[in-house]
Length: 306
Image (cartoon, rainbow, N blue to C red):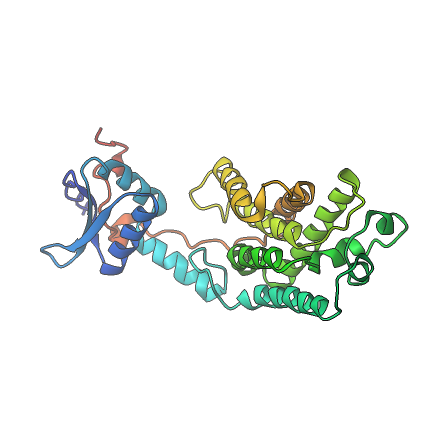
């Protein structure tokens, strides 16, 4: 027996035949794309989502891209991922967030240690690990790492901590604690090395901004992996990465742009390289067994109804 065609959607309907939780998910998804919508219960007890008639075609396209195989297949894939212990892109704070908090606590602890030594003269800052071009040139290469944990003032530290708490948890979720720490340190080193070679100065340098730019870059590099990119094209990921970098890490005057960009670019490379293979998703069930909701009538036949 051939499966029946879904009933045609009204001009303002986005998706029908949903469970309540799926309707809520669709409303939130559309809100994130600046489309107002609402869910309501249909006469048969299922739920549907409606939007303004002018917004409905775009809303249907967004829902179809987010749930290409239907809501049941999406739920099955998420359940399989949780069973395997793999990362879910919908989780922000999670069991691996502790490593991000631990790194933040190390930064805070070292800043407190700095305040306990008295007046922060140049000699004392050097003793606490700040970067000096002359000292690195004579062989104190360890300063390129120690400088990541040194902050000259509380405002700089606070800005870095807030940014780290925004971009750190998603990366720790995908890569795990050890790789997260490795990326934080290696990109901080790469940023300071780039600054040392390309932007030498007689003043002292310090701060975790290059490492945090590296975490952001690694998050973008992870998203470049086809298994984690979702429905976004690579140029969209890179464009979003540049925008978030300018907003969070800083592109204003006074910032060490060379260190930031060195960390960002090395992070993209390391994130793409260190991303673990994505476990294979279970094969989607045939439409007849899935019983998925109706999204756009005639889509299975290749007829967009336009």
